[in-house]
Length: 477
Image (cartoon, rainbow, N blue to C red; front, side, top):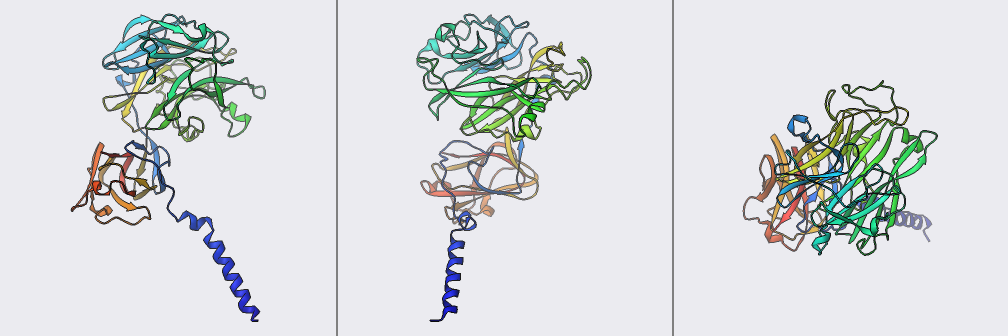
């Protein structure tokens, strides 16, 4: 027997086996398909992305309305603004913590008070977050709210008109102890459950005082079983361990859902109880003991992408020295979508948070910032970026983009099969889309290629992006 040839055969066989089973080779195979349907695919994460190159994910740029001045000075949040029945509806905390008021507006900027909220047994540093329940069939329960109930815990209430309320559980708490700030209720259609977010405490941290955290609970039917909440997770900012509590703490979290993505509206307390910048000053903008308004994203309302927080990039920046919102920003419990824009309402204050040893007097007011619809986060290519989607079944006739193409830039799209080969007639060079700012940018291909001809087939999209920003795509029927 020729042992040298046998050894060579064994070595080659082993090498081929290792190569064939290696992650590198597997990574070259098409990824598993994703369901797209006709839902808008927000590019806030890589859920639908197989690969991307030379693309930077950026926050959208908001514009503060009313020249950055407050739009409402009679109260503050923690509260809610919704668009319903052709008008903006606002629930706001009255000065001195003596209850909540209800106001309405036609344009989202000029609000008129309509009534005081009644029927809720608020307690402590109270909040009121309001939702319109899309699952509810009884008009008397159309509005639901979470609030601060006695015992520093969460309570629930319902209403026909959003003004006169009745408490669930006879006004008793529906959770164990929760601290102040937002208690927030949400119906999650995809998960078929209600979610309740509350603040919670992790006690003191190395002698540094409070260590604020948050929790999320689920309940399939709180109307019938208001106390059957199951805690999914309690969490704090602790990437760097307990010492991180001296740098930042989570003050409140609410959950706004859009196209299957959970957007956490997060109030973050930064450099808590650090008064090294001096005594009270309602003019100077401070950087310590302040609160910022960030967003985080998630697909399950539990595992949050906190990149924007750790990058120090709030979705709505605090104002400059002398402004009403220079030191504290507290978001409304939800985002309003109306007239092609997202409306981000918030409470601003002109002085820091303070603590029992360093009390602050400050003035509160409500402001609003807006940005284009579905442009909270986008992918940007200054030079030449490429985005390849995961495979998906084509269930429509048209490809529509939400995009901004700068002068001299371009945005082209190729349609591939599941193996990554360009389908005939659908090369990037053959695609046609509009330049400039287009929230509804329909893509065509020259010649006789029509996307409708591929209906029912598995495809992938390959975007060629230069000098442009892409926020989302969708397949339209």
